[in-house]
Length: 480
Image (cartoon, rainbow, N blue to C red; front, side, top):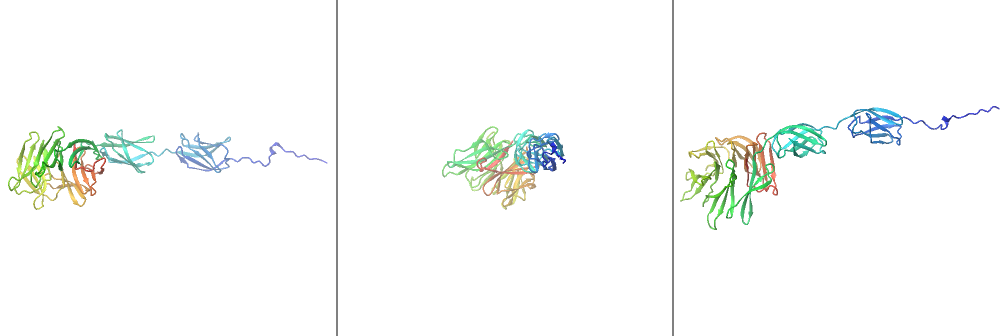
């Protein structure tokens, strides 16, 4: 008998054990990414418990997670475009390439306006704007308030003290240049005047205002009389820096109602009061002020007939003289008037007894009076230092038109803007910024500070609130 012995080698001790299969990457995405983004590898033959190292162009990810069919890795902060390699055991598996993209850079394609005033809004239009990011806008180094951010626009407000120069926008760790802007300096200051009632009388205050918002800043002066009185009208004459306030007053019960004038020179502090009109049914009016002189109408009844005069009071000497005597039957009402220094003329916008609009000129040196029929009436006018005349024309209802008026004929030269308001209570003009300012009031008695930029035609309309602005203004005025 022959015995045949069959032996087993050491390699055949576990005939059922399989050789581990190599990792296979089926796909990965995305193929381009920024640092910090996650890359997902769809794989086969993964051992979840095994450690896999993911290299992005030689830089290892510090955040790798293994799943049953996926490996996820975060692109490291210093990674660059190049090969992706997965290392495990002693193997290097080349997966493909990854393009490293930069974070989208803010791109400003345009902004407007390119010429602005402090307080104006500037709108920046661009790409890659993220509303979740905080953007700071600097106007030649001074930060403005960022009013709003959308996916397409950044709106910022030109800050006080800003000057012409470069605009930069900073966000996160980046700063970009948006362009240059011209800042027009507003040399004028804005003031408002209003009454405060108490003890049956009125105290009349003048405040400086924020020229952009109308908010109260500082009290400038308190105007009051020795007796209880009521407000009639006020105006500020810029070329003389004189504030003129008219009011009615009773000296004693049963005595005639007096119409007084209080003047305040803001340069010298000089203040004086005189009687503009004594007893009678019709009021006189302040017409204009120039060269430290106040021109006004005066009516009185010496006998049966009424006398109507234009007088001038010299504030340096205190002397009052008559410039012109109107006919006894003259009944026109001068509410819109002013002075043209180049021709020494008082100008009046009024109506005759037939309700015909009239434009009149009175030369205060020669007493020559000329009159023109015109087609429009104006609720308010303003004459600038350069003798441009702006007026408010009613369009009916709550619509008004700001117009420029020919100083030679009294007719409209051009229409500047249409505004919606029940009344336009005061209009003024800034030569330094070529802007019109107006005080508006709506049907709810709310007041608004309206500005119109005559260079670009843009306008703003800011509601005045009772707490911060005091919405009982009788008027506004500018002073440079």
